[in-house]
Amino acid sequence: MIKVGVVGGTGYTGVELLRLLAAHPGVALQAVTSRGEAGRHVADLFPNLRGHLDLVFTPPDASDLHACDLVFFATPNGTAMQLVPGLLAAGVKVIDLAADFRLRDPDEWEHWYGMPHACPELLAEAVYGLPEVNREAIRAARLVANPGCYPTAVQLGFLPLLEQGLVDPGNLIADTKSGVSGAGRKAAVGTLLAEASENMKAYGVAGHRHQPEIRQGLRAATRQPVELTFVPHLTPMIRGIHATLYARLTATGEDLQSLFEQRYADEPFVDVMPLGAHPETRSVRGANHCRLAVHRPRDGHTVVVLSVIDNLVKGAAGQAVQNMNLMFGLDETAGLAAAALLP
Ligand SMILES: NC(=O)C1=CN([C@@H]2O[C@H](COP(=O)(O)OP(=O)(O)OC[C@H]3O[C@@H](n4cnc5c(N)ncnc54)[C@H](OP(=O)(O)O)[C@@H]3O)[C@@H](O)[C@H]2O)C=CC1
Ligand SMILES: CC(=O)N[C@@H](CCC(=O)OP(=O)(O)O)C(=O)O
Image (cartoon, rainbow, N blue to C red; front, side, top):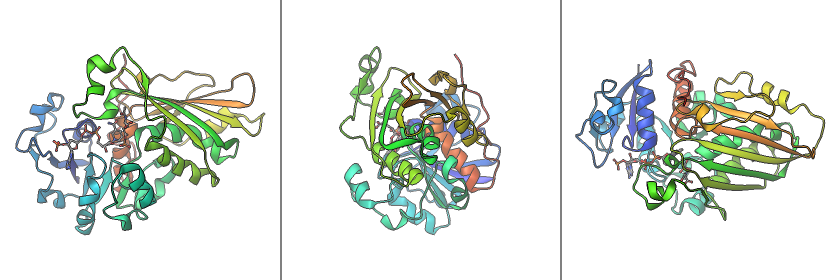
């Protein structure tokens, strides 16, 4: 059994990790941290875990993290980088669900996240945890940077087109919608029921921190400069991301449906739906799947890709468990077999 710790067990990605890990056949949960809830039973705070998990929260500085084989960080950006060097030195592997190790360039990190990086020397070693791109490197990694939710949905939709050079990388558009759990569990006016329900709005249009992350991943796939217009929206649902992706084709006549089907044929968590299908966020709610559909509007020069994920699963905790399975030589799908909740 892999001995696992979770730092940030009182947040939305943390409790989703606990739900998945409690049912995982190869995991023994050893430590779940909270600063404010230390000493309290996890299942008292999260009754969905009653009967599944018998642990109390401990403070994040507790030495029991050092006794783990793997520690997940489900904490705000800038938290993991303070503790990761010590854990790695103690022989503990780490998966960070935040952005601390996603960007290669420490200056870019500082620009977007507003603080100097605490351990820039680890950025080159950290592996970006998108298994559909970096599977072999993840297997060998001791530090994995779990991708952001929007970056997962957007990259999986654009990658086949860019890898084959079929679209103009200088003219990509990602119009994305997220449920409010994407903003985390902390109290904030914008996610109050009376603010977020019966409402939809764009945000971060002038610049969102997921833009450089997506650009970095797409640039690696195409080896050319990438220009991406990325517009996120907040929508009145709890879970889910829907990305509508637009690109200009540089060649017509290609069988894009076959291209996508072949690219993802061996991927357990990417479902290429029939040409022209309309994937729905509810079709992935609670599941680790990304569902994609390719559209060719009539003018012939544009391809539209629709991509849906659950932000808390393939966009965070589920992808983190997928990465853990790879890092520890387990079946990649272990603990992730559940179908989506519907309705
Ligand atoms: N929500 C989403 O859909 C996604 C989120 N992410 C990223 O995952 C991370 C967690 O997100 P989310 O679960 O939504 O966030 P939440 O705000 O819901 O939870 C944050 C957690 O971090 C803990 N925490 C806060 N500050 C510290 C600290 N200084 N030291 C230790 N623990 C701390 C809190 O616990 P306590 O206060 O009890 O100590 C809480 O459990 C973020 O970086 C987020 O950007 C990534 C992909 C998707
Ligand atoms: C709806 C909403 O607010 N979503 C979050 C994205 C959450 C996430 O994945 O961000 P990290 O890169 O920090 O992991 C946002 O736009 O900031």
